Amino acid sequence: MPQKVGELAKTLPYYPKELPLVLVSVKDLKINMHALSCLPEDGIPNDVKVIESVNEDVGSDDDIDEDSSIDYEEIVYNESTETSSVIPDISHNHSF
Image (cartoon, rainbow, N blue to C red; front, side, top):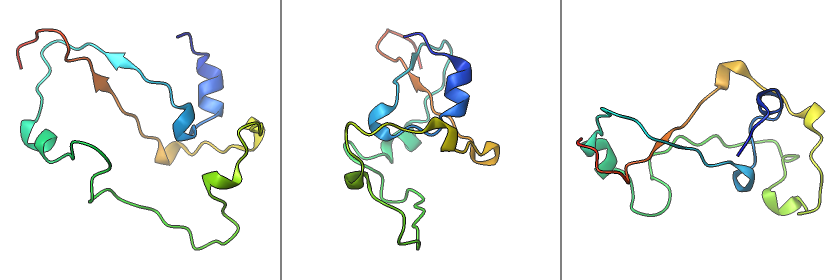
């Protein structure tokens, strides 16, 4: 799926339903089996850091219509909170 990098940098973060999925194949990757076993089989881990807002003006996803358009000019990208995630493609027969 082609992605305009300039557009990506101006529109972070996406809503969860808009996140693209990127699969990456990596050679000689060590999987931390202990860390992997600490993850739940389904759902969200219990010890994930959570940020709660005390501002009552903050709406939930229920407040957003499916047809509502996002004003990308108002979305702020904060370089200090940048994070990234990679999902390795382990479907091939690699030795770990």
